[in-house]
Length: 474
Image (cartoon, rainbow, N blue to C red):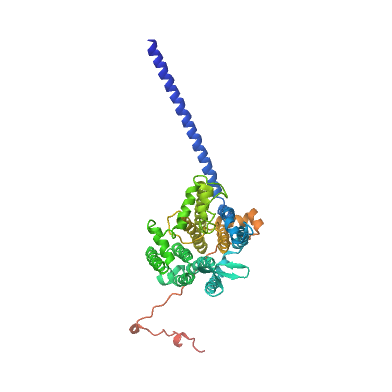
């Protein structure tokens, strides 16, 4: 009897303990869900504020520019000292100068009214074509085997970076101006596609395949956001694939890059040296990296580590966590940029915001793709992080235009015009944006169909005797 009672007491205590454990677990789950709901509610409320897109664009630009300065300082110290032996901060000083110039361009991009930018896109495109032609003359200088820079006094400019921005702004202006006729192929393709092909040809004469790919991305984004038919993109894809094959066969170094990517086991080790060293650097980083400034790849093991392969150094020094932070910033740029495009009502702003966002994010994706071995090496810089003067300055100008587009969201316009410019607006002296007013529709006069020749009737004579309705004489 005693053993049975003890068994019942033990089982009762077990059941009671199990119920307590289940209640405690359910309580913890409810608490966790309540925290998640509270965070989601707060985030949704903050994103619903009128100027949320504007603040997010400014934050992403500042974080990418700051991270770029830090990584260029770490990556270029050895190259700076080997260059002239004077200072390890030589390249970092130039990068900081161009970030300062980019900050001024950012201010111009966010302050100049968007209708004025649209009006200036045509003359700006003409200037870009002239600069691309000037690069091919003795005024241009060779950089890494391509005549891509134009020396203007103490500064060197890469016109191809301006060409990407010019094609985005001018192409959107032309396509939106012809929006009612875009269902016809002639109006959809002319003059945007011929001008884009002219830019492709001028850039390939440098030669610069990577920048040509970026220009192609801008053109495809323009046609996509104006609603071109799907078969057009299939045609463009086949034409681009054929062009890449022709260009690869035309130069030995391009062919070696593609062969080394498609068949790395049988490729020339010299052609795969950069790609292999980049993956070694990523593998050495591990989860948290070797520490900022402690990477070994910058000691001439990975050539151009501060240019096109700076993401490999990020993975080596900051690890997987730092690499995911960089990927998260570009993912946030994609989300915020497309959010700006969707929330605007001006068709030109929608196309421009979407095209500029696709351009920057795709350029980052291509750069990271060939660093990790998913794409062949093309020499495209990582926006705002890689070392480069014109690229950094123009990218910050693009961020300024995106911030300007964010201020033209209908809710932002209403808030800025009723409640004032806000703290950032006062600091940057930004004018209040004008609300969007759709252009007046043109009324076409009704066309009268002529009557058949056999059924024409003469005009009726006046009952008062005047011919053709004239008043009779008195």
